[in-house]
Image (tube, helix red, strand yellow):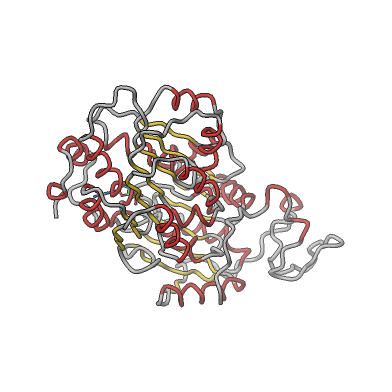
Length: 434
Ligand code: AMP
């Protein structure tokens, strides 16, 4: 199928072709015509399927057909869970609208309010926002949504998981009732169905792929590895030049920093992405990763939500994820829009239960691999007091000093090692059942 048959405006078709897209992805073929026809829509699609263009292209087409908007009253509001996703949607909208006279403003926390307030007050056709900051600015009467025509809730399931429902309800209550509302979610849960009843009118449902199954284009492997050998295994795997653009996931912020430090020590250029880093540091990390200035990006789940980087060759689950949604989301960062990608998971003895639960969930086994040429019998690294509290689950070495009051049970983190910035970034979701 070609983009020409979907009913899109000519200027948008031009931008799409300049973006190098030759044919629509399945979610685009299915969602664009009903949105162009003015229907509400609920799109169930995994990340990486091209869903941003699936809602942006038809909305822009409908905007282009409206009378001119000299006062720049806001016509479109897109709400998304994270700053990174907001920035990406903004970039996408600007690329697809490059031949239209439209302005786009972004709203998210962690940076000063004033520029955002000024942008909203001076009038902007499209606003892309995180719910929390948007609600704050609406409270300050910075936004005027009285002429709003289109509302998009992107990654609605994740916004529910992150506890944004009360904010979203307040925002939606303040919007005009007559509008076109689009909602995108990786899964169709009861909660999402409830939201469609609240916010939408007779929505069309478009569901791509099986429910919450990993992207078909991603090849998945498991490497069983003792915990203390994870750094060495990662360094060993990275000797393969095919691992050219690698996203590594860790559960904890401090672990992300440690993994990056260890790789840098081996001469592998890395950046980190987690919520202890400032907004500017996070944007720079993403920019360096996208441009190839760094080969490896080490990230935690929440910070990585919505990462949209083309060409990620490998995702490495350095720490096995705690939730099936995180696994699906993580591996969806590679193999985007039908490119090929590999997802590698390090699995320790402690992770076998989670691995089995995941395999049950996705309905198939994941191939176990052994790293060729890797010395699995390698000795535990020499004890380094500076690293105290970091190798908590490695087998105890003979003669290794044991600090009083610290547990030596393998696999059991010592409570002292988990404070402050070492806490896991909590997503508010249940762990997967066994
Ligand atoms: P998304 O699921 O919206 O995050 O999109 C995933 C990636 O696919 C983005 O990097 C887009 O630039 C890219 N993309 C979207 N639509 C197409 C298309 N029709 N052909 C090729 N790439 C696309």
